[in-house]
Length: 355
Image 1 (cartoon, rainbow, N blue to C red):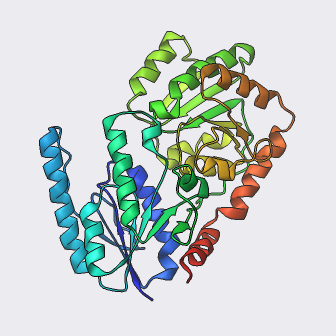
Image 2 (image 1 turned 180 degrees about the vertical axis):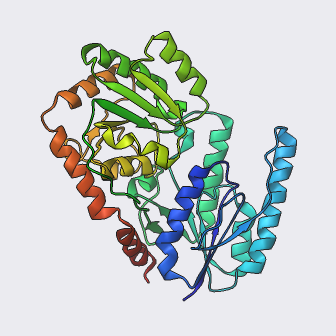
């Protein structure tokens, strides 16, 4: 078997590492050796971890210079690791220009992964530049990969022999906890995740369903804004802002949710939705990206037609008052068991790669 090398951007938090390490398990049976090159990664038995020192700078010029230096170091590490005939995967690697150049010089097959478009979350210069870098690197790769077909088609990419659909899996298929009158949110606290609209929408819903509470799990730029909005509404008794939680902490109460509220402007294949479904917690989610490929309205989840507060409130009411919630919850769990276990993800990877 050949060897594989995975290139990643510098890792700002544990979330990208969690997904990357799942990817390693998916591809593990297909390669004699796997190396992953990034920064600040923990050790894993599934791959040789090569960490390159990277320190984020607040000064813009220093930040650019530091990142160029990081890529040069990755280039040199990769030059020692890669050999002709290997496979190179760019997983959350949308800024890895020099490693892509290295792969071309080495004659290595390159697989570049695309996710949801942050440029749809906001029109900032940073978001637009991220999309440009993703589009550029995807155009240079031998194969363009995504966890779901709609992630590609939403970006205007036609499915072809050059595209590969390679998805991850869910670790824990959940328990059978008795559901409580609780709704959960599990996401970045950012404008693109419509979290402020969700707070307002839930508060409106709560007026006619006072027995329900909302758990919000996540961190991000809008954390303080969310905290302020909850206080303005005097909603501290029914809306809890938990911040970022490790899985062990999250799973103490998450299995008791009746519904996952997941409005979003853009998405890949969200692990939070799959994990919720594995616990028989269906999602009320926006029909974007990979969500369109896993959620069938009123079958294994619910489609949120808009992400404004009024639509969220009305949709929550329809779902909670429907007589289909129990069946939909069971179907959500069955969907994950049928398609998103580790063995299924490994089988799909082999098939997509032609192994």
